[in-house]
Image (cartoon, rainbow, N blue to C red; front, side, top):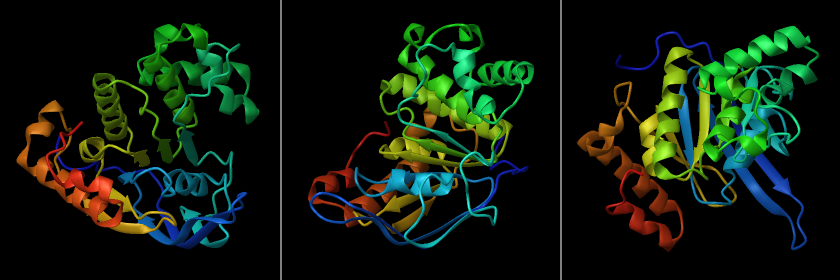
Length: 275
């Protein structure tokens, strides 16, 4: 399979001149200012930048968990609202309820939406199967490895089959090999069921491995500094790391980061491995 998915069923995301400010003991914090971004339906977008540049704030706007102080946010032409079924969000930590089974944790969004028990069980089983966690359905969170817990968090975000999937660094705590496996799984899920995916990451290599475009953020207050298209064929296997084309794209992302951020990021323009 090459190219991008040909049956996109996601929704477009339109963010126009958005400002977000937070109150803080030392004074007001401007998290985002004048941020505009259009994300095509069915695309896989990676958002990259150091801590504090507003990446997670951006996802919460799209999920409808946060209201902008100025500007507009629309998902499929409609202002996003929590629980409307159009957006799934997986957090950096899985946030599983410790006394619930894996299946019941995954089914929680359906339970909150009033879906019946039988349908919840069936859809949780399907979501767990999709992320390779069917055998762990009856386990409690304390019985799961870190990678298994992350899979459960992803299954919970997928259970409503949302046309937009937001991923807030869900694999950052995993070791490099496990993270690479998860990247491959994400790619498989996206190719099998095209939807709009937005992944927040700190890894240039991960962004190039999985995304169709990489959004580079400015320092706080966050804005879009540059968008780097990633026109590599799908699927993208481990050999991508040795590809001259991938290396050139990773260097372009690093250069965009170094141009916007502090001096300590400028080594990213050098020989960082795609990890």
